[in-house]
Image (cartoon, rainbow, N blue to C red; front, side):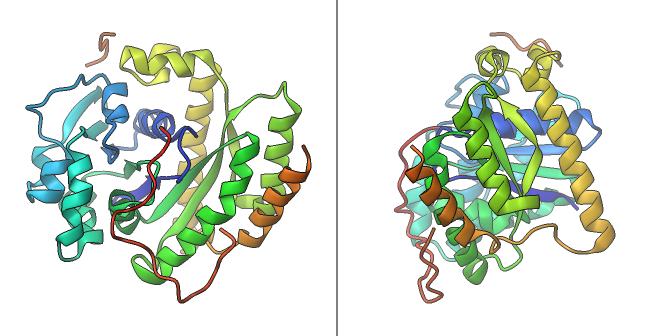
Length: 312
């Protein structure tokens, strides 16, 4: 049975799509059969895996709104052991159409039920908003992996994000855990990156992955060539980092299965995140391969009206 991991952060531009594509490819290369679900209407994950825009192609929209069996939508990502459920701009309409449906938060969970036994991992790339698409992804997931950019404003959003996850556990997915917090766009030449990383590790401890994703030109170039970075430049720091991350994810999950206990809890560290934010504020082409508010009474807004600024 696949472990379903949502790659999510309400802030845009933190590396969600980059992480989904490259972690997925690295897991597949480690003999972990993996399905990537592009749940973002921008379709960046789809294009980053070498699939150009195609209006005739069936996408996640058909699975969520038209109840198309998802195994008829799955594409071979041309990486051994890696498949893709593509996305396109029609998902914008799906977010609106879901509002009037029964069990609207659970459409994706139902859609993937029949294929979970075919994979070891299912990764879901979420849009940068807490809308019905993201809620569907989190309701369908066993855990959430949170990429956090090593920059000043990243600290301010951490407590809000974890507060959201706590409320989701009280409403739509009581078993949702945190797979880990991933530091991205790390630049060891700057004091700011080092300070942000140190603050996050201080407050969240073992929830933060040991692996850090650096700023890397090859990592930024790879999507324009329609391939994961490990196929674009296996020797780049970006490729090496995501390969190491895949090993860490696999190792952590083996420990979790061995002990029968989830590695982390979404409730841990929310107060610390608020302190971290406060402290930060005061411290100045071709495809060559075949919150601070924790009122328990506040419900999660599932009307699909979340903010959507930013990109992945």
